[in-house]
Amino acid sequence: MPNPRPDPAKLATQILPTDRPLPPVERWNPPLSGEMNLRITRDGVWYHEGTPIEREALVRLFASILRRDADGHYYLVTPVEKWRIQVDDAPFLAVRLDAVGTGRDRILTFTTNLDDVVIAGPDHPLTVEYRTPGGEPAPYLHVRSRLRALLSRAVFLELAELGEERRTDQGRESGVWSQGHYFRLGPLDDGD
Image 1 (cartoon, rainbow, N blue to C red):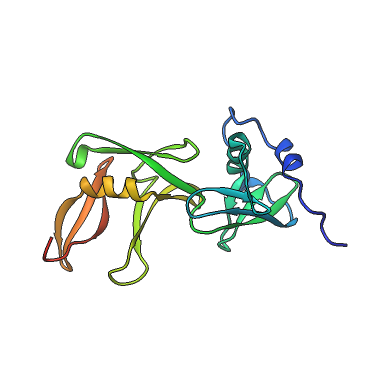
Image 2 (cartoon, rainbow, N blue to C red; image 1 turned 180 degrees about the vertical axis):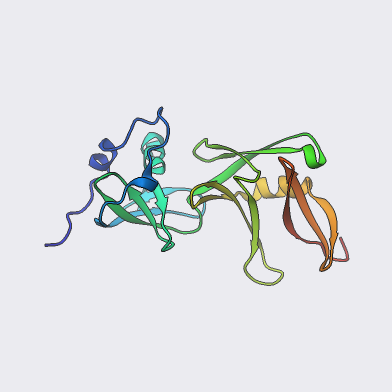
């Protein structure tokens, strides 16, 4: 007998209120219930059955039970259900950057589209991927567990403005400091 189609409202009632700490989704191991027609686009918009979810409280609730497993798939997990969902890139989008201090003493604080506040550092590293040589950068911030936020273009440009030049065996590169840790942004061309 196929699994019944998930009801987002019913699933939401199984979740803790949003004013409490995040649920321990990493400790929950229910069997796979199936696929939910839920998609998070690259720009951080959540869609259910092709329609954007307008209720921000519901999106926040779902984000609180979101998990990425070692298989690379994303799931909404409760103690009794586990629904696979589609995420185009990263489930969160960093939409604001606040920088305090300079050099090694700088603190970079990011705010996501769901108002999570994350300070870049050893527990929350910044990474920049270049999927093709000379291609567009894809900058990410680790948020929690295997979940990360894609930096919006505006935030990445602001971050790049804070970049400091460094020489390496491979040439010149730009990077930023936060909480005493250096994060590489990318190589610099000789014309920079």
